[in-house]
Amino acid sequence: MTFYQAMQLSANVMKPMIKNAENKKEKNKYIWAFILKNILCMLFCIVFVSTYTKIFGEENSVIGVSTVILILTFRFSNLNFNVKQSTLTLFGVFLIYLMGPLVVLMTNPFIGFIVNFICIITLVVSTCNDTKFSNHSTIVLCYILILGTSATTTESFIRRIYALICGGILVSGIFYYKQRKNKYEKTFIDVLKEVSFADERTRWQIKLALGISGGMFLGTLLNIPRVIWIGFACLSYIQQKQETLQFRLKNRPLYILFGSVTFCITFLLIPEEYRMFLSLFGGIAIGFAATYQYQIMINCFGALSSAVPVLGIFGAVFWRIACNVFGAIFCFVYDKIYEKIYLKTSEEKTVNNAA
Image (cartoon, rainbow, N blue to C red; front, side, top):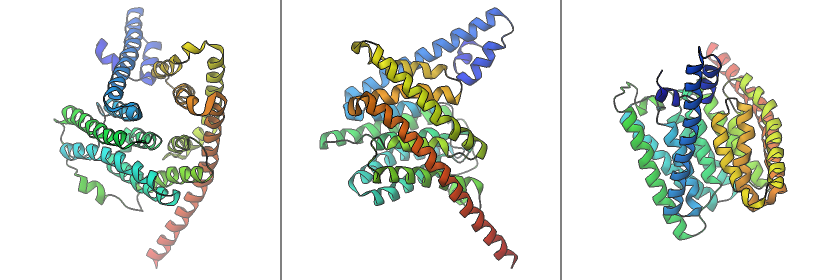
């Protein structure tokens, strides 16, 4: 394996390779590839988002963040159907990012719930045909992220339109360039034809979209600040495999607590002029985290850094923990209800078919 090839690997792949290296030379090569990859990736993200913010304004920095996340995702991932149609689909994702949050902002929570469900189910069905790529985890994450940062002026919204169009062109263009030589028999129409309430994948897609929308809806009714944190929690908890869901229900709240308390202590101990670097630390450290638990802990640094100016340090920490505990309780109850209804419906269909 070349140095460059090693730089393309994720933390959960690289760490075992470093541990099991045959000799010191090979081990050092993997270590330096791992370190350099994370530093370069972080520098790229900083430069990209800073440039985006400078061009489109501070309120649209979230579009830069979402765009760079999807660029890094779709360098390698695909949608598992015709490349040209997949390219157009990815551009369409950015149109949903534009219209969905706008309609939610302009309507009441009930209409917002419906709009969120429609947007999320559309995103998941169209981009998560092959669930092994977990495209939904980044695409829906970016939707929730944009949902939580609205444009407050007409000028800012116009810039957001340009920012999203630019982001759509960049992501779909890079995707097409990387995937252009691949051939897929399946078309977008075939993907839509595969949608069936009897299908396990469709069942999970509906469960995910309904769960995220429902969790944020309840959070909105309860006037919980940073309701998008509930959305992120639901996105993380609602998994296809029950064992993964149960694992995350047990571990996420605990490691959110650890991460939030660690951030709070660090924030209070270091001089004020260095606090701005906590988010940067989180961005670099996340690249070295190979397990779900430590990724959750480190993510707290970025999330809380953005919330402190609005909620204060103690308010941000409290709501970070509270939103994730709320999300865990909601998803636990929601999972039981959804599975019970689905099982009952399936049994009724079986009886009717037999009759």
